[in-house]
Amino acid sequence: MELRKLSDTGQSISSIGLGTWQLAGMMGAVDRSQSTALIRTAIDSGITFIDCAEMYGDSEQLLGRALADGYRQRCFLATKVSRDFSAAGVRRALENSLKALKTDRIDLYQIHRYDPATPVEETLGAMAELQKKGKIRYCGVSNFNREQLRRARQILPVVSDQIYYNALNRSPEKQLLGYCRREKVAVITHSSLAKGLLCGKYAPDHTFASDDERSGFTGYSGRLFAQYLAVAEELKTVARDYDLDIVRASIVWLLAREEVTSVLIGPKSISQMEASAGVGQVMTGRQMSEVRERMNQVLDTRDLPALCPFPDQLV
Image 1 (cartoon, one colour):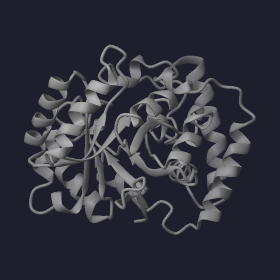
Image 2 (tube, rainbow, N blue to C red):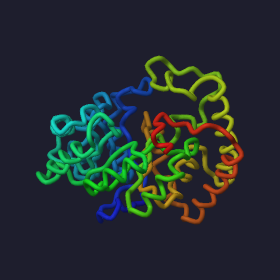
Image 3 (cartoon, rainbow, N blue to C red):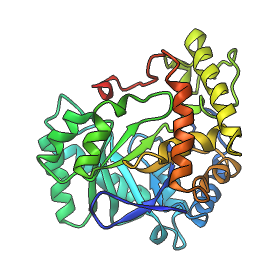
Image 4 (cartoon, one colour):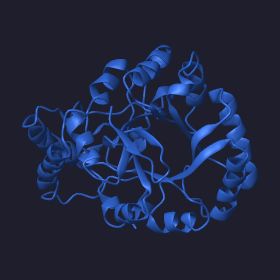
């Protein structure tokens, strides 16, 4: 597994990370009895970066159980404060996460979103205090646009921004990625496969179940859904030219950007995880750039709205 630098911290994390939103059934039915095996298989395969959040159902508890027997020491563990961004809320959320994850320190603690109702100075101030106490190693943010990230970094050395970025949402390329490159902020991508649209398994008439968050998302039904899937079909053709499937090609597309430190994947099964874990390790940087360029040639011909549930990132 390729390792990439986390900002200028000297810390390296795996270029493929394991996201855990899906493990609590937030994107439809999942075999929860397999969660421990899935997480441990990911770590055994070389994935060192594991990401969670306060609001991910009981995923922190699932992780806490899976990281016993020495697995905690083999991974770089990240989670987020998701609900109450006040100083008291941050302290409470962190303690709850430490308890659920059965650990005494979070490697990367992140603000899940920019909250206009709570001064970011208050949120980051609380995180800085917890960092001094040794309960947090590094502080990061998630879903922050360029100006929000710039403001945060005036308060605290934020090392990463976890963003919604994939081949169907290129909006971070407008301003955010350039800023991250100049300021040496690590970019971590979530929803890296556009929440399944870049998996190559859906037909235009597919209907997501009511317990699947996508059932309420714009772009996951109707005309737009069909248009996004049509683009994915064209990208499959490009992928085949490099002996890749659409999943692997979409991950390579992200890894070809120098700003991207880690691409989060959200497998529901061990087989899905294993299909993605080794992506890029047998490709040179030049080959990855070529795949990205070929995919962009397809994407540039399509005038579709960016598929993004976080419109602030468009700024």
